[in-house]
Length: 276
Image (cartoon, rainbow, N blue to C red):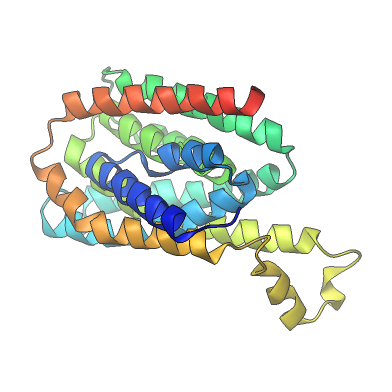
């Protein structure tokens, strides 16, 4: 899809809004952006890597401000940092498998999965149950959420943030943990997409291909739409401190209601766009 100046600015504004929600609530960036970009006409295999790398930039930036504002503690022996390590360690493996699977799926299947996933995440966001904290639950949350992220570009934040809160983690800490844990998972998912898709473009053994030819293929417009990535990165990085500041005085019940309804609408919209 060709990106005009008007579309570039629109994408930047959308990314700004989505990252504000994500850094303030711990969810919403990829979950909202994936269906929005698909509805705008972008191929999922182009949109998802762009979402992943831009969210890595936004997440790293926002996590610094979350720590500075006291929403979360990333000191060496803190519980918050341990949760980040658990979620990231198991999540990276799940992300790689999911990214490989998504590359080999028909576009209609991938769009359907995204639509259903977003719809389910919206319903989960509206829930308000509680259960006891356990590290096994954190491992499970990390695997499921990262698999969703690698497969669709979204679905990480709602699962990780909601899962932590349901598991007994304090709300602001859960948001800060999600923001930081998402960054390395996004980077791994982005690289997996580019490398595996590039390998699939060559006939025969890729080992005989020159390095320059491989990288030319990897960063070709078919794989890597730099205008889309730039717009998303600018929007997500610029808003990061505002999102972390919002978390300090966040009224979670009202915002979760609004976000949950919005995500459900986007999920339905994606399914309608896919089949109508």
